[in-house]
Structure formats: C-alpha cells, structure tokens
Length: 117
Image 1 (cartoon, rainbow, N blue to C red):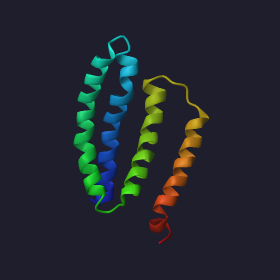
Image 2: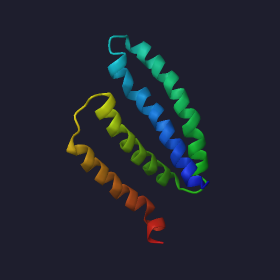
Image 3: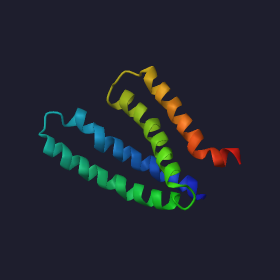
Image 4: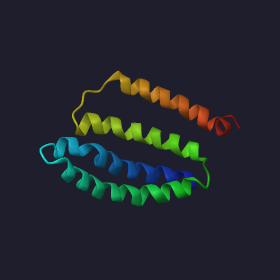
C-alpha cells in the first residue's frame, strides 16, 4: 500500500479520536468539573497520538512538513463537519463550505509542485 494512503488512513483514524477528545466533553461531560473532562480527554487523545505519530513519520517520507499539516487540516474539517452536525447536533452552515473552499486553496498552493508536475 502506498505510504500516502497509509498516512491518510492513520490521520483519519487519529482525527476521529482527536475530535472526540477536543469536543465531545462539551456535550457529554458539561456537568462535570473541567479537570474530569480534561483527564478523560487526555485518555482519548492518547489513542489519537498512537495513530498520529506513526502517520506523520510515514507521511514525512513522501510529503513535506507543510503538506502534512495541510493534509491534516483537510482531514480535520472533513471529519469535524459531520461530527458537529450529527453528534453535537449543530446546524449545518454554509460557512463550513466556505472554509472548505479556503482549505482547498491551501491544498493547491502547498501541493502545486506535485499537482503541476
């Protein structure tokens, strides 16, 4: 399997854990003290790092640091929007689309050497 595919897969999985670690406590633990939410979030984030660190090590063999970061941002927004709408019950806003278009611009600029040949 190509290293870029492995990187994308691992980053997607790690991002699921990251999104839950960063935001699920707002819904699930809102009545608990912040320290409880922080400790539980750290526990969830541990699994994120078990996937994210190898993803970045593998990805850095074929991508630049900037490309890895922009790839992560694309994945973050791609997974965050369904999380916000379906799990957190936030209304879908066109601002997500506009943000996505801005990130596509970032993808173009950071990957243009590979895209343009």
